Amino acid sequence: MNKLCLVILFLLFSGRAMTQTNTLILQEPPVTSGAINIVTSNLEEADGNTYFAEALKNERRGDLNDALNLYAKAAFEFNTAKLFVRYGEALLKLGNVHLMMNHYTEAEQVILNVALKNYSKIGSKTGQMEAYYQLGRIYFAANKLTQSLWFYTQQGILAKQINNNTAYIESVIGIAQVKIKKKEYNLALTDLNRAELLLKSINNGQLKSRIKEAKALIPSKSIAKKS
Image (cartoon, rainbow, N blue to C red):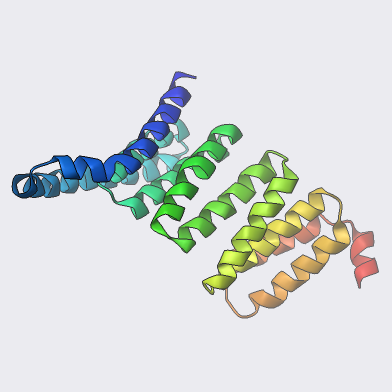
């Protein structure tokens, strides 16, 4: 419980740190602080990269608590160094580990209240799209189907805007999974068939497997009626 409180406190602090950046720069001497800031920023970036790499190793080994703490540290360092793209990447990983541990509330807080705002602030549509996708997964796992459907839909809209076919197909599959859970089998099957057609333009075995797994959840009677 203490660890979760520390992560939340870190996130709140890091959000405030982003808004205070310009003020801090204005308060420092122009020449001397420039050199100091460059050195400090480089050190923070290096620390962030180290924490991130170690977090990846821990995540792959299944040491999720350690991965959680290291991703939080990496996010803090990247934010302090004003590397907001890397900051967002660390937040997405942090949220994903929370999701893997079934910490749905914590995952939602990290992605919705911090990562998405960060990407919106820096104008990254790709980052926003990835945050929407993760929120779709979080709400789906938490059985909040209305919210999940909305965020998968937003992911698809942005994917079309930036011509990311893979992400668009992911959104269609996500929407279909929500409909399957709501027992809207015919609508889900329509979406999955469309995803299969779209998949012909790209070679992605993972998405092909996901479509197959989703179709297996639809009762055979519904598939027969659709045929």
